[in-house]
Image (tube, rainbow, N blue to C red; front, side):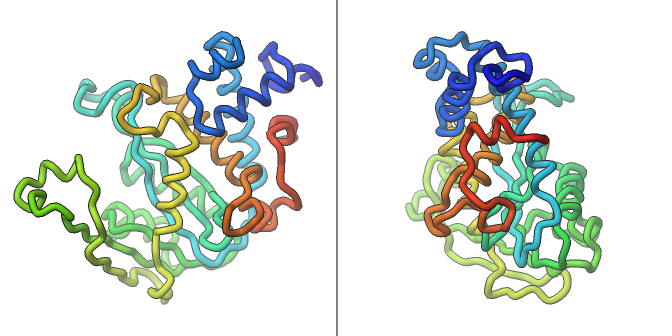
Length: 288
């Protein structure tokens, strides 16, 4: 890899590659980037692929032996190619997909992620990966999704009694009285939290601090800064692998480059994994 070609197999300069990656991390779409940089769309996609693969390897290497007190896990919905109802039976590369995220509550670090179907098998793989990245006993909070918290759920299967685990279930109420009569309108209207319920599942978790709010706020950042997660637009992914590269790119940029408004530093700095704010150039040039 030469200095003028920072990404393997991409015949673009460092300046062009950094500009494209920066635009991708700020929520711009492939066509918009192509118009502004005058690069072919296929070139932009190749940069996404190469940078995303590099970021996935970087995250796998750097985020290890993390010391954390509390972790929150949640899933973020999107679709690939078409909505689930338009897929054929047995479709594995199109339809609805979920991005599993685990967040360190205090540092806001995204510890690990997985983009796949929302099944217990994928939840087990996601949590197994999480377990291998944390070196101490910690408190985990998820929502009340049964494949997580059931008697033979993924959390119990992966962690046994080695963590403190709680769930937070939110109960929503309709702001508009019509929604109580016509539930089908809920999809088109905002819902407010009427009440929430927190339950101990494993060990002795602190229910006062057991919440998924920080992870849900990170989900919002994913939707803002990753074009493929914007709703009701044509920005959705057409290929599953491109979606995964885009998520890897976002997570690396969020952890190492984006200064958190509350922390006044990056999540990687807050977690002790970096001593300064990384630039996009550093991400692309880092050794993995």
